[in-house]
Length: 292
Image (tube, rainbow, N blue to C red; front, side):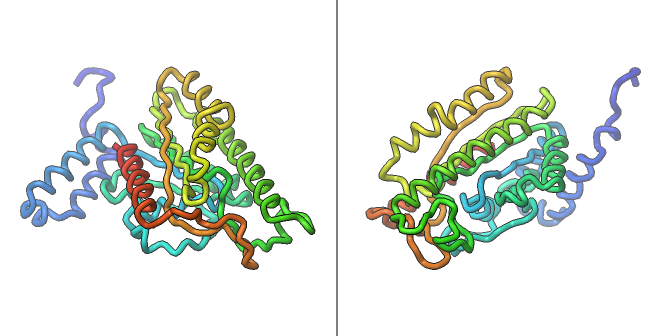
């Protein structure tokens, strides 16, 4: 063997062990019984061995819909099985993609107390560093992030004697500002990755059931001088190794309400079952295409 060349045993290290483990889990008998499935498993294993594992990070503010999206794409839940309740996570939630177990999906906690936690950040950094390909899904909602155990009086955007419409406008502006802050942090994290890594970003604009009557405004916001400008600057300055795409939808139509029952934003009139299915199917199809 020539000096400086890499032997096949050296190639089949941690990656090879993971591949062989996956093959063993499927079982030789089952693979023989279903040749089509066998070819698919072997093709993914071969691709994984030479391309490296793919890490997917789902990020965004608390209440934007990250966990709901994770559960749907990982096959843990169907959309109609989700209850719409806001569940707080304090750690990265790790799953595997339903169609491809060589894709690791990490959902980052969205609450301020946990988002910047050192252990959370370090785990994500290590996962990204070990992956040849990085995919990031940034879940946003035009500010309509669900409220968790917060009464109306406890909302920073509310003042005594203030109308709910004023409170809602202030809350949406506050959340959009936080979206931009998180986006800047995401840019910093991705910018620290070696130039050899390809990075694909998908922005998912969730909560269409609360904003679809303002669709043009929402699109302008995320494509224009606010959110869109940050994305455009990042993709333009990285020599084409970072790409960005965008989709929108509604994972769970549910009113934006406080813990004590005040509805700040109801599901919009006309957002019926047909519209929900259309939005959901488009979103899930775009996410699946993003994983290819």
